[in-house]
Length: 279
Image 1 (cartoon, rainbow, N blue to C red):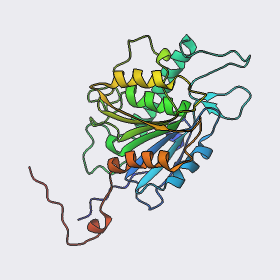
Image 2 (image 1 turned 60 degrees about the horizontal axis):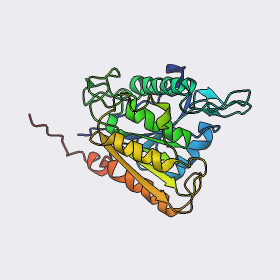
Image 3 (image 1 turned 180 degrees about the vertical axis):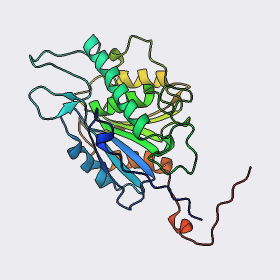
């Protein structure tokens, strides 16, 4: 007996507050979902190409469009680094802190309402629901910082939380050259961490955009102690850019591989195989 679950393609009209692009898995089996957060000034149509080339098995792609405009640019951002007068907003400014929370709430509401399975979803429910463990987040630069923030503080994968989603943690979160700035939070008083999150950050040691990445890494390692796991892969000689070498891609694929939930399609196709449940 087949236990195939058919996920319904998310429709942008069902959540008008956030634009996105959805693409089914190349093998036609959308068992996992990779949610993509592009970098500042970019667009989801560009960023999704990177994920397509990864060719992850049984993994659909959902590329989000950052909700805030970038002054004098067609791309968008997750938090306003500067305004139309060219004034920079430091991470500690109230405007940046408010933007981080607003973006987090917007993305978390979208995921909990249109992607993640509610805690009381029956195992055989065939609506649009991915279990939290089947959902992965991946972002670059500011998008990576946003992905980490959502994973850590968005109420996803928390039992009894406001989102009401499944009690298991997300499958994993990957940030490429992106760190949530410690200064964007109220000193050492962080929001409640979502438990059990698995995070990988790939970081070039010649990154001149995130030049304080060592101190950010230490801060987040301390913050996650006892609440999750943070792995940092240093890429020698790399600046602030998307992955271009085998070392970084190997780290990303090694992180995703053991955590993807893969169905045995050959076994499911056997007519004389039945599912046996024990009490």
